[in-house]
Picture (cartoon, rainbow, N blue to C red):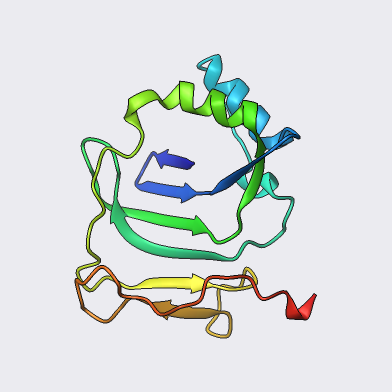
Length: 149
């Protein structure tokens, strides 16, 4: 799911969801706003309840027309949970508008991943800055490391 900010600039926060039986309370608030064409502020950090989120960031473009360049993307590395009903309702809301653009090459643009919610040099790994357009620019293992838990 993409959450798009369009005021002074374009920014997108991407979150992956897996289907479960229980509703995600924060996602429900977002769906209610969208279904009633309402406007409001939402705190995306509350989707998971985490204070800090492991994430990857890169400069890209919107996935729907007008495919605006220089869009700052931030994608959560944590899969969140949503009920199957919420996923169905989301699909009804976006219809065919979802992801109208084909996968694009990186063209040498870096992808920076922040672990443990850190924004400093100790918490990130730079990914995909090889300049290759092969579509396979990353060897980074995105799987969670549960050994510390």
